[in-house]
Amino acid sequence: MTVDFVTNEEIIQAARRNLDQGPWDYLVGGSESETTMRRNRLAFDRLAFRPRVLVDVSSTDPSTTFLGHPMRIPVMLAPIGSLQVFAPEGGCASAQAAAEFGTVQVVSSVTEPSLEEIAAGADGPKVFQLYVHGDWDWTKDIVGRVKQAGYSALCLTVDTARYSRRERQMLSRWTPPTRRRPWDPTHAASLTWEKMARIKDFAGLPFILKGVATREDALLAVEHGIDVIWVSNHGGRQLDHGRGTMDMLADIVQAAGGRARIVLDGGIQRGSDVAKALALGADAVAIGRLQAWGLAAAGRAGVVRVLEILEDELLIAMALLGVTSVDRLTPEYVCQADAVTAAHEMSAWVNKPVDRIL
Image (cartoon, rainbow, N blue to C red; front, side, top):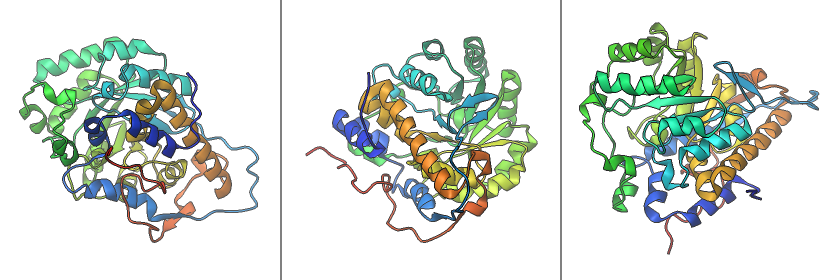
C-alpha cells in the first residue's frame, strides 16, 4: 500500500475521519485539565534555533545507533496500549513499519496481538515495555517470554502507580480494551527501586526506565546501573500539572552525566522537535500519538509515511542550522524564546482538526 500524504497534519486529519469518537478521545486526550499535555508542546514552542551559516551541508546524515542497533533517524516508536483500535493488525503493523523504515519499536505489554506474535511479525530490533500487573511469579513468566521471543531490551514504565482520570474518554463513555481486563492495582502501586532492581537482574537485558521526570530519580537510576533513562510524563496522560518533558531534559542529562543513554517523548510533532531534543542532550526520541495517527490513517504505510516526513523535516532543520550529523547538535543551537501561540495537543500545525464529528 502506498500513501501520498504530504504532511503529518494531513495524516492526523485522515486519522480523525477514520476513528470513532471514543478511540479518538483516548488518543488525543490527557489527564484531568490536560495541563501537562499542553506543557509538553509549549516546552518545544518556547525553544528557538540559533542557526550557523556558511557551513557545507551538501551532505547531512540523520542516522544514529541505539543499544547497538542502527536507526535511520533518532526516532523510535513508543509503546502504546490497545493499538488494535487504530489498525486491526495492532502492534504487528507498527513492527512492520519500524522494520521497513529502519528504526526501533518499543512494544507495549498492553497491546495486541501477543508479544510473541509481534516479535515474529517483522524483522528489526524490538524493545518490550512492561507494566507490573502481577506478582513476582507473573513478572518472571512474562519476562521469560520476552527473552524467549528475542526482544533486545526491557523497558519498565514507572509512572503509573495509579491510573489517571482521562476525562475526554470518560465523557465519551469509552474504555480502552486493556482497561476492560481486571488486574490488581496494588502491584503497580507497590513498585519500588528494590523491586525494579530485581526485575532488571532477572531480565539480564539492556534495561530502560521509562517515566523519569526529575534530577533526583535520574541520579538514582544511574546508581542502579540503568542503561537508558526515558524522560517521560506519559504524554501528559498520568500526573496532571507536571512539567513538559523538554523542561526536564537538561537537568536529567546533567544528572546522568553520560552514564546512561537518554530517550525523550511528549509533544514531538516535527523533525525540528527532534533536533531540539537532540541539541539538549537526548540520544533519541519516541513518538506515541504520531504513530497511532499514522496507524489510524493508513496502517503500516501510514506509520512509515509519518517517519519519512519527520526525516525530511529533520534533514531540513539540520541543513539550515549548519549541522551535518545528529551528534553535532549541541545546546549552542537553541535558546529560550517566547512561544508564538498558546499550546494545545496539535499546535505544531495551523489547521487543528475538529475534536468531534458533527
